[in-house]
Amino acid sequence: MNTQQLENWLAEHKFGLYLSRLEQQFILHKLAGLRFGTILQCGISQWQFRHVCAAESQYIIQSNIADSGTAVIAECKALPWAQQSIDTIIWPHGLDTLSDYEESIAEIARILVPGGHLVMTGLNIHGYWRLFYQSCLKGHSALKLLSARTAVDKMQRYGLFLEEGQFMGYGIPACYGDNHKAIEYIGNRWWPHLAAVYGLVLVKRTVPLTLTVQNANMLLNPAPSVALKSIE
Image (cartoon, rainbow, N blue to C red):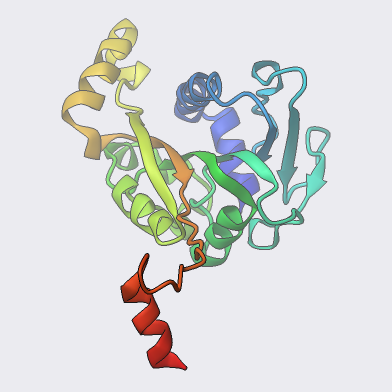
């Protein structure tokens, strides 16, 4: 399944639109505390968050699909940005259609500044939505879905650590009507593994090691001095 098919489903199908609204609310809420600096959105150019960003910030939309909302056309596995140049990355459904996660995650980690954040969402492979709606997705058999736990584990290998997360997509309007908001709250609290989508906020952590000059004076620092003499 390609990215365009997934974006069309999120924009046109009734349940896809429902999930889109939930995900955008999640991203908007998290961006409220991350609105400064250089903010890069990878994919789904129809979702616009420019109004949340501070006036002095730079908000860029990148996608592998050429459309009016995209500023830069590029694949996630070969990002055209310098190392440690982006403060916040928005990556909606970034992992859902990738056959090779490792290259893209490595690139995301490469361009984030230390302490930078990744805000991402994805379809949950264990969600009960698949029983009712997955067949509506054209090319759904080619989806590369993960659980939230698996996504977090993969990110952690590249120095991206979970700060907070949320599960969404329980209150199917066709089933619960006006009660879907209550079902969303109950689901996120008690049945996280059944959610249709997950939202994650991850932070890039680095622990730089800096060597300090050792005092070779025997009286002030005898142990390092002995070590230095043994090396000579």
